Image (cartoon, rainbow, N blue to C red):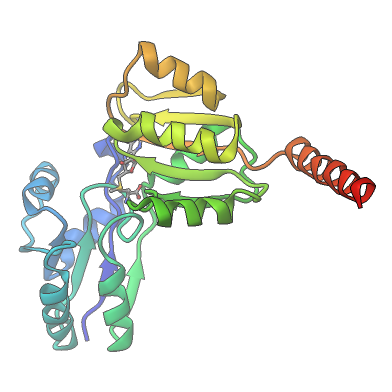
Length: 245
Ligand code: SAM
């Protein structure tokens, strides 16, 4: 049987390609790329000439089983996305599932990922964290998810496209309160910037400097003070209810 390698690629800085990722891409029989034109640029830069096929959200149901069949016959495959770690807010999960069902070995390579890169320099308490990625598109699903994570005491990590950044920050402000937050912009690139402040302050800044480039949004977990305040509001409310009874 062949092996399925999950190969991370740079999130902006080509030097972040690891030596191991380069050798795997050179040695495998085939590369499954989210966007073959995009990946061609990276492969040309690295002088890699391995054959490539497309594997993305829109063809995964047809392409996935075919690739697995070939791997059962011995083909080794490297799967990668446009940037960062495959599977994480990117294609790959279905291929991993199929491979495991068919006993095809899955080998992950460590490497670039926007969420972790943002978290470690955010200054937020990184002992535990919750990765959300992109919020669900429908309001009902987003509301349900945000209600579930609202009580957590650990930072929440979101991905967002620049044209939706402001709306998402407003949404988070409304559902999580005016918490501390960090915008990690253009990580590993020339204009890498970290902006730290409350959600209100970050929204204020976007008024003067509209969103451009790629962003990770990190929001601090619920603070002891917030939880304390909610508890005291609740006990005030109970006391009042008892007085009225
Ligand atoms: N698989 C990728 C990873 O491991 O980070 C994530 C892919 S997801 C489709 C793309 C989102 O990741 C962007 O919308 C942005 O939120 C975040 N992102 C990717 N590259 C980034 C960068 N250089 N700086 C900041 N955020 C980035």
